[in-house]
Length: 241
Image (cartoon, rainbow, N blue to C red; front, side, top):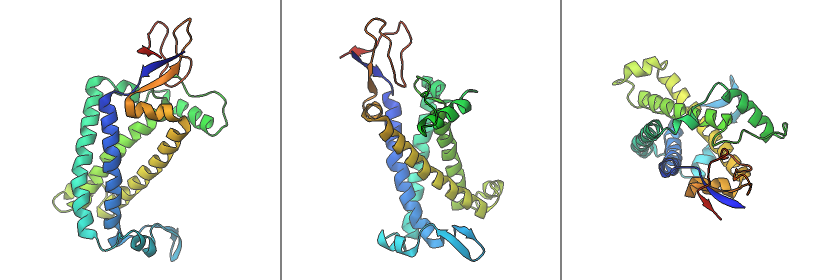
């Protein structure tokens, strides 16, 4: 027997789906800005192992010679990104959702176990609850990354007016390097996040779209048998199918 189990509130889903296009557009406009001074590479001395974005990349996607346009779009989107993030944090604090998201003293150990399981090195799956330790660490890290992106971005945008902030972050060049590193972190998070969504299947994706999952239950005990949103004994699923 299957039942409908509520998972993500409407507000969480809205914040999630608003943040994705905002951050994607910020990454795109950031490339317009980065074109003007694309100094970062992997290598040493005069030897370059990897140039992040060659000239052909900028030309193929028409990203070159758009510095002013990129700065204008990036700064406007920053306010949308900041507002969405603040409302998200405020909602989790008021609603109590933070209890599911905030890491505990067991989260690091669980994160290792989840990683080993995902790599096929451990048979036992992650704990059966809304968010496991790896998810708690990842989602909390993204919030902190967002704060870092805003602060480093402001330090670069107004290095004179906000000189105290720029100096606090180690100077303009250090702030720029941190901003770039955080951007790389977002891209890596996107890749892993999307891969995990595909791996988890349609039921998990539907939970972030519609707010519920379909779960198998034991007809005798009415307990959910498996999945990240298991119901404790005695609780009743929201709707039978």
